[in-house]
Image (cartoon, rainbow, N blue to C red; front, side, top):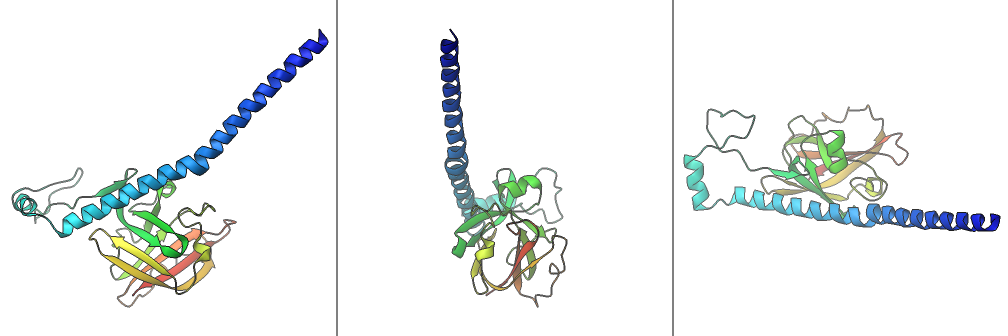
Length: 225
């Protein structure tokens, strides 16, 4: 009887181990294979939609021109200005407004740039932190921050970037500028001294992310060509 109970215990234990292994493998497969693929597909779709909207803004057809001359579109929570102009169509990514997207060829990064910094938005993509109403590819400095997940996602590989490397920024007008990195350094999370630097009328960007040990920030300064 005792041997039988012991055998049943081993059988149950074996079943639990098998179930646990299957669950563990499934969890790893989802997080490292399935979810990244889903995220990549969503990112590609959002960027394609962003490009389409930007192209439509640049080349409206005659019907759209007629509508713009006769109809005023007002988005929710926005009041009509004195000009009565039509609001540009926005592209949303996971519920957040895209103001553009960033491409870093060296690290194989292509991510939406969101217009607001919150814990949720930073879990979704990279985002413009400064200034409060960022205008991409315009004179001045725009600070773009992103997580370092240590897995190649977002700004995880920014430590591999060097002076002279290129960064591409595309804005809502459809214009894409190439930026060249001219400085890279580490600083504290509280340091914002480089936000308001004098760019001498040139468009610049700052990329900010944490180091692998999360004890400092990797800061990259780049200037439009």
